[in-house]
Amino acid sequence: MSNVLELQEANLAKKELTNEEKLQFDVQFATRRKDPKAALAISIISGSLGIDRFFIGDIGLGIAKLLTLGGFFIWTIIDWFLIMDATRANNSELMRQVHDSIVQSRA
Image (tube, rainbow, N blue to C red; front, side, top):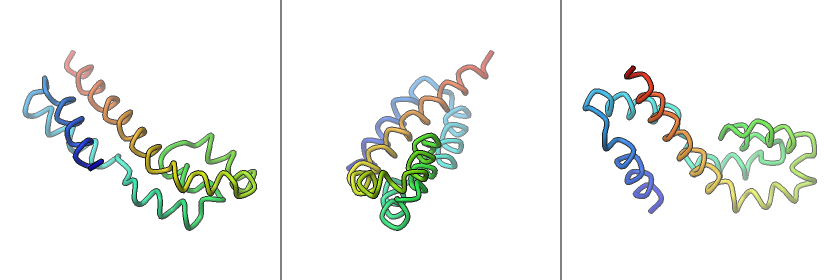
């Protein structure tokens, strides 16, 4: 279901782009997006070290999690339920950034 929503969001973002720009968007987004399931697996395996947050690009939270050993493991358990949504949110932001950079490069 979430892949369908991401696809719909990507199609909406590409609506006013030319064919060449759409291809550029697809390549840039596909190479930089993070898989929510991979983030969950990383969180389960090594979440107390903050590696899951580093993986999705939340460097500050990754450092905080590393220094506190996953918030004394409490934060780690909470992230098992939240990391997939955080990954999707970061992917949505990445989608907007890629779109904006392509639109700005027109000038």
